[in-house]
Length: 498
Length: 140
Image 1: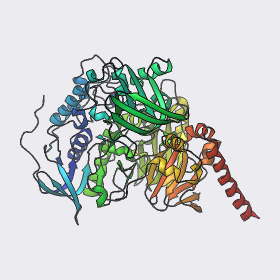
Image 2: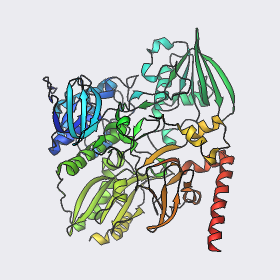
Image 3: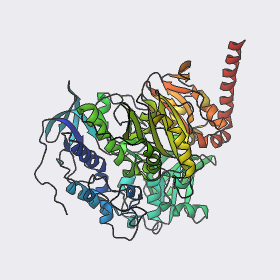
């Protein structure tokens, strides 16, 4: 295994850019900034790489797949669609690393396998981090930002916070003060032959319920809205199929229950808890006596003093308000990486969110953010090679069929071709919301989208004289979009670029 | 800092939802999502598929058709409903004039939500009738 640096790099001082965090968002951002030649310091309160994966998921198995065998070669770009967990490497030795450490028993890695993959990425990719350096306070300066840390004071022009949206959160005033959070779940043996009420019906709630099935006497999942299932929602944000055994139990009347109710109070007493709730889909007051309650009510971003500094936030203060390049709209120069990038909603077509809350989505956001920071703040521009006009249609259809950025971030990231100085050139991967809303040269972008019926198809966006039009191409039962029909349609659309 | 309101509290403060009980508001809150937009950001895009139903909680927005300003919207106003009711792309852009906080209902769940909440549907019809009346008054 590659060795991690033992001496502490990046002593307190002034840096052009600082990245805070050593989870997958921080590692990916730092790796990409280094590759682009952006001088920066990375600091982390942790003592090793991995972020949340040093602890979670609580039952030690991920819900994001890394397929040992797939239609694409493991070190190829296309394989990234089949590997949702590895970070993005510029060299083959840095790619598809989580796969190397999986034991082959499941195509969902264990927490330890994921952590090892991230640690290996930091080592092989030479991602230097000052570990054990805790950010404690923030200030503004003429140049940008000041950071107070456990090791001393830092300053920078550009600040990237990759601090995770993984801090336990319970809704205030919801009567859950005495209820332990998902993060404080006890060992399974402590729930043996007990009735357990889980507050919530999202993935963390179903993860708990699925793990409790063999030990608990009865499991009740309660929240106001019926469970949203990923296969119905066409998005990974719904409860994943992997955890649905408790749902089937409920549907069959097997003893475990999914309850649609607004909880008004949870009181602790000598022998357990009393849960008081109001039914929603079936109105009426409910009072339940249970042995244990766990709040699977979600997570928050540890913003510290940033709101007092002027950071605009939403979702009850849990997420920052970000522009399409994941920069704060109220504190320019402050960027968020990692799962906080879910705050930039993008086009959100048909209500289907991006995958920015998970590694498979935010690793691409980090790479684009690094390119954006390099170009905007440090004038380091990416080469934009020309593309011969006769290859334009084939390139765009190939991108729609195999580009992992477009598949992992549907309706969110797009592959772009631009006309610059009379030439047709690659515009790289761009946030779709930026492409359709910001002024720019004449260009064509392709994205992969899912509609309300679940149909997956390419979508083409044409920008001519800063007016953008949308054109949907045909789907294919095997997602092989390089058809004669699509070739004909796209050839007509890109006539202005020939 | 002032604590942020949760979604149920935001919905309860809007005329469209004023007939809903607390549990119904809690359930509705889990159907809507909250989104913030910076000034000048486009929210609804003319001619694009897959849009949603938006209700303004805070801030102002402009309805634009083919680049021309048509109507200013403010707190409690909603937009995007014609597109999702007819299943057609929006016929206008809506652009934030100020920082804008919206509650958003995804297009695919709008029908089931409105059928499950007839009092909200009635309030929405009243608002549409008011818009039609104002439009006819201008035409006459």
